Image 1 (cartoon, one colour):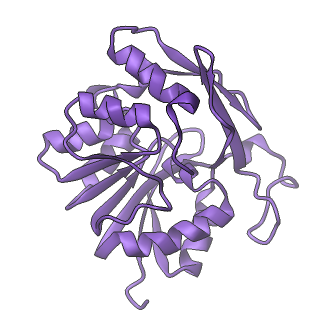
Image 2: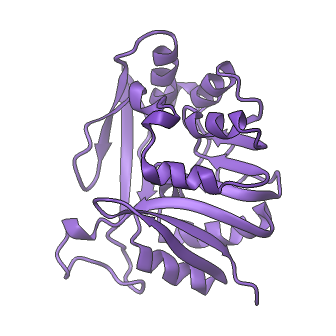
Image 3: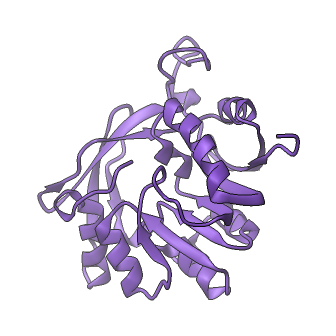
Length: 241
């Protein structure tokens, strides 16, 4: 995903308004394949006590120097920073970056998954269906190559996704060799007349994630399984590569 400008940043504007006191602020969500009506500021600014078991599992597993990819409001980075963990919160949205700075997150950057060159890190954290930032199967392949440069030896990726297979018939579910994987979708956000450009998003089932991880020399373990196909995966480089 590329960096975005303030004129195309409805999420950043919505989060800024919520932080300024508009507690009912929300962005409308349009997507290609299923219904998802809105994204609320209240959800995006949730604190530890309102996070679900999957998020808490991931945050408890973070270690060393952490890069929070697609940090949004910075809610996960705030938890880690309060624990004394060295965390950098990264997002492509200038509004999100501004909101995180206003909340006191010390290390914030506007950058994208595929252009970030700082590090290396011990943990790459990708939550809120964070693997979706890859955008597509092709993007996932590029990410596995990029991540090798971002991680220290022995480093880990903690990422969640959702298996959408239950919403499709068996004949519609794509195999790793098909041209189009059924979890490749797109989204567009809008808020107060600000409309984002459509952006690609990837929902991937665990077996397919593990298939591509192994191809690129990564070990992939499902460490938490939640409801409705959502899961948390831990990825690390295969010791023989």
